[in-house]
Length: 109
Image (cartoon, rainbow, N blue to C red; front, side, top):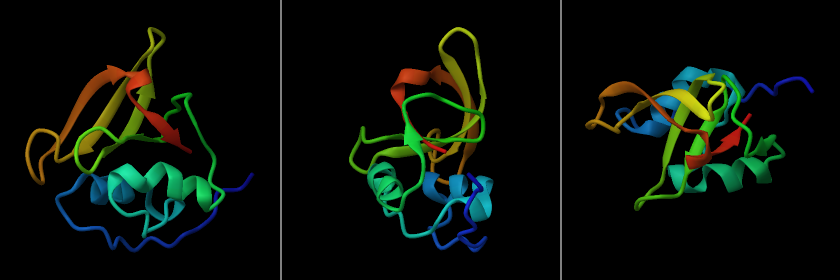
C-alpha cells in the first residue's frame, strides 16, 4: 500500500521523543498522535499499519513511564535486537542512539 502523506510540518514540541520521530519520518507520520503512550492506538485508529515485528524506518512505541516513549528504528539485527535513534532518553533535547531488544516496543509502519 502506498504511504499516506500527512504533511511534513512538525507540530510536536521540540526536544521530546515525539518531535524527533516525526522529524525522521516526515510526511509519512501524522501530527496529533498525542503523547508517546497514545501513538500506537491512535495510529491504528487512523488505519496505519501497526504490529510487533520491527522494521527499519518504523516507529517503536512503548507505554512505559508516565508518557511512554517513541524511537526511530534505524536497522534490525539478526539476534532480536534493533538499532534505534531517539531524543529525550539521555536528556531533554539530546539525540542519541542505542541497541535495544526488539520486544521492548510495538511498531508503527
